Image 1: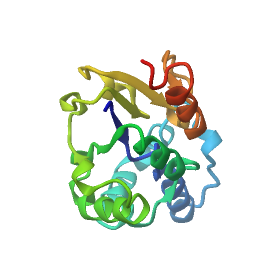
Image 2: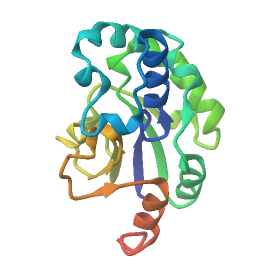
Image 3: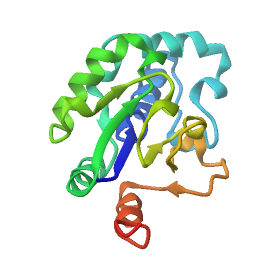
Image 4: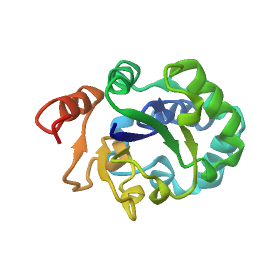
Length: 180
């Protein structure tokens, strides 16, 4: 059975919506996702970089993130035909482990916790596919990298892009699906 590794933040968990909401509340801005075309919030507002880092470093930050539209249904479907792993570069925010684990167990209970991978470098993954919103994670990865669209990567020219979970299902069950 082929293996699909799926990133967590901005692929299945709506990290950015919470970050924008808290940023707007704390600093009296009216930023929207559309304002971040090709950039992260800390690139748009470098003077708030430490505050943004501290916000995300809060151990409870990841506990109540929303779910990216279509992620649950798509991963359930994919898990019927592929071995699905959730892979998160949690070493960037080590205080996030517990909240991320509990969030996954609550929202993706059909994926066994033995398939949760908390790592630093995703090049260690032995999967056939990696769905991630950061193309840097494809460096050294031996499988096929699929860039999941997020505001920060929309200006990036990457050949294998998934704009939604519907597009992911089309990719795996369409012409590039199980017959590969």
